View 1 (cartoon, one colour):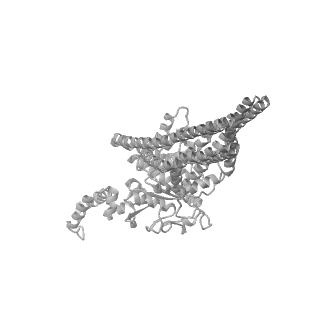
View 2 (cartoon, helix red, strand yellow):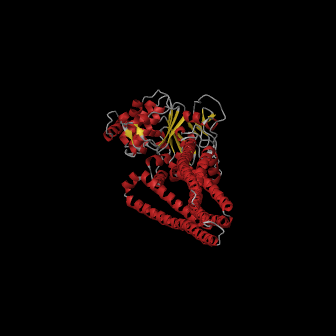
View 3 (tube, helix red, strand yellow):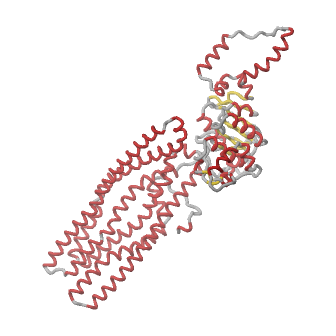
Length: 619
């Protein structure tokens, strides 16, 4: 796999049972790239470690005054230099390719999992953790995957050098063969402590990232309530904790790095002392001493990769665990579906609550509990976050349909819709029936002032459709974002549209116009709005009141406001004390007379006042 071939046509099915299994799966799926990096690494490291032998031969040739051997040694050194340059170039190329392709594979897997889970992802995993996995963790996993091949090449080179020294000069080769493994493995006892400190640092960094993400997402609200300084102090404390943890982790890694300098130096001293002793005894030549000395000095270069692979694994292991946790999440229903059928149509029925939204009608649902409303909206769209009976559309269970068909049949817009960065034209370019124009959807959602704001905020866009929307629409107000999201849903024109509090951030005049436009544009389609707004409820053809997870009342808004005190309490925001006082007054009030007395001339006037009393009660 080359970088120019990205993205993958199919990133595969990851082994997400654990972090190490995910790392092994990533490396195994890049076996070709790993082998190329291993071969180029072997060429590079072997050429570097061959230079001391060339130097030793050159020294001995100079001592023996052999011009032919000196020229031959020069040619060998030139060949080694060329091999070093070529090997290093292609090793770097192969390593970067392995790193980028591994990171790209993981990013594709995460994007596919996010699309597969839908809104259930952020309910089961914190949004900050998803951001951490898809950014920093992806880089760490790619680093470990590409470092494996370089470490393997370095380890094989060290073994080859030890064997070559044993054959070349057994007396000193034994010292090197015993000392190099000690140098390479001496840091192993320190790795658990270094790893635990690195884990603490990453955990604190993850919490700080989540706090920063949540703060930025709610910045407008924080400014409104004056909570900026409070959350700034919280993030400052969290960032200081990350700094202290990073310093503690760096101290341990600095000790490990120091040992990697100290121990090879001690080995070099031992080799020199032993070599000088052997040279005085005449058991080795000067050239052999220089060769062994140079080999021990140069072999420190591949030994550095032992520390690097330890660092890469310690940093990537918790990242792999987080990524595996996200990739192991599954939907409660089968994505492929078990029923092959045409797109269903008819009433939308929820067996869990008894809610039935009539086909081709405008139904409003009052829950009173925002969390319950969110769960109900997800369940109506076939995205249930907990096991239970499936919602039926025209008698067909949504969980028996494929994911694509279920989403085509029922579109859910939650209370906090996301606007992706890009132009307004791109925002409204969604899979749609083609029956609703973008202009009509924007008009129904009352987006005239939003279009003006987009043009004013763009440098070279005279057409609002070409104006750019920033990431998540942060340059717009909450009401403007809400109306653009509603327009996007109206353009899609699904058979069933479920809206969760679509006008909670707009003023009452705009809300009344949106309600009229929504009812007009969705005529002949099934629309379910979860809301407690009297303006939307008054325009609904049917209002369903849910209490404690079950249907408690059904009717028109004006009927329920006068006959159901609990419905009235939810819609008018009555407090519990106000409701108890109203119930007490109704209990002590005298019963109305059976017959209204005829007041002769006053009777027509009283009859005219009756509609006014009804209007006051419903207001």
